[in-house]
Length: 137
Image (cartoon, rainbow, N blue to C red):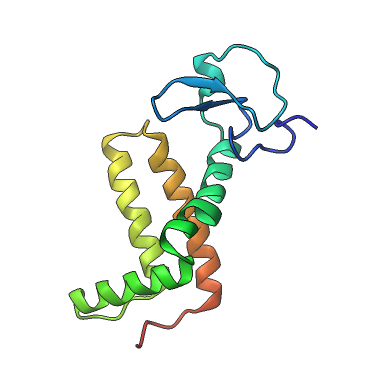
């Protein structure tokens, strides 16, 4: 099965990844066509965006900040104290999504903001099922 059928977690299905220095290299994680990258091949797709958001929210961010429910609960408590009103983890997801939307208004081609927006939407969907009550600690 090629990475285009089952979206590769590293390249998002386009067959190429970007190194930290910004250079493009072939994905070593999957068996792609081996064609040289073009601007069109590196263009994000809905599957690559959702795949990257899923990877970041499930692995990278979870390792950096801990479980999303606890992290968003911490954020909700901090913002609640600052605003002097109770916020939920769902509120945190929506407000972080609005932050990304505001940034995208200025720079709609910034791929990372689109990925983060998808991630916040996915986390909001998941976390809103676990609790709909305001933070009361």
